[in-house]
Length: 146
Ligand SMILES: [Zn+2]
Image (cartoon, rainbow, N blue to C red; front, side, top):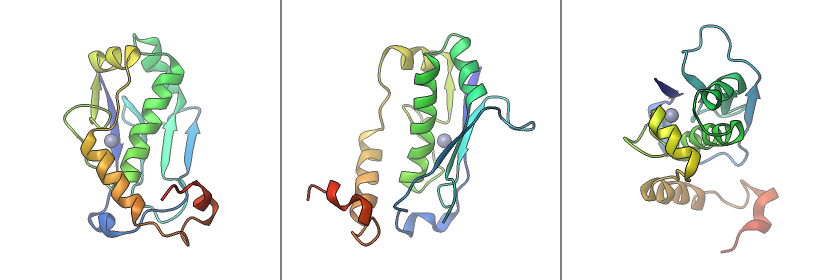
């Protein structure tokens, strides 16, 4: 039994600049028809609107069936889906935070340790971030340290 992290991407997404604002919505319930183990989804190439949707009931289900606390499952789900947006990609790794289907063992590990982005993903996210200009993110300009 695993958890399905699904993203939808278009091929030209990688060449676009990152959006300055990331929007996440948490719905109380997954709509009917959503794959049974899906915790949410992301739209890495969306030009506007909500890029990440998370289903609270699905996160609760993972938590109640031997997974980490609800808050921790929610955090991982948000981090994973935001990862797609920050990486401009619907792609997955074979292990770690960006793995596509998390097994019960993955969740057990996530309950007692921190599952981070891979070093490669961190570098890619940083590279996209450097391409943002101050004009793109005036509200965050004061947070720049370089
Ligand atoms: Zn994913």
